[in-house]
Length: 79
Image 1: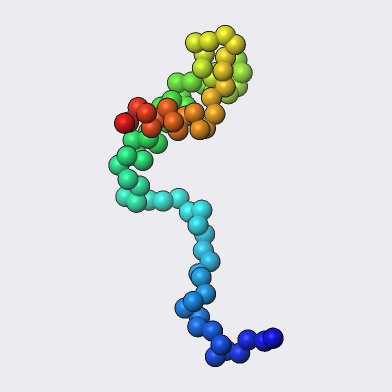
Image 2 (image 1 turned 120 degrees about the vertical axis):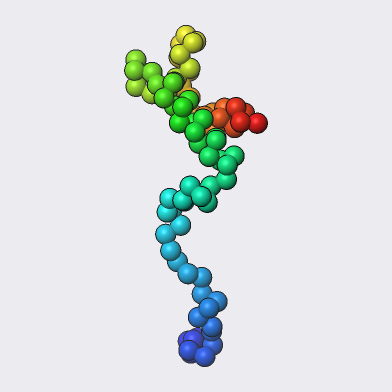
C-alpha cells in the first residue's frame, strides 16, 4: 500500500520541534515562579558537605531529600 500526494493533508502531520526548550519567565505562572524560587532557596539551605548531597541535617542519620520532597515542600510554603 503506497500513499499518493493526494491521499493526505500536510497540515494534519504534527510538527516536530524541540519540546525541551526552556520557557520564558513570562510564560510561567506566578504560583510556579514562587514555587521555583522556594525550591532554589531550599536547595541552597539543605546542602550537606559531609555527604555531598542535600539532606535534612537536623536528624541523625541525615535524611537525603528527593526532588519530589523539594517540590512538595516548596508548594506547601506558597499555599
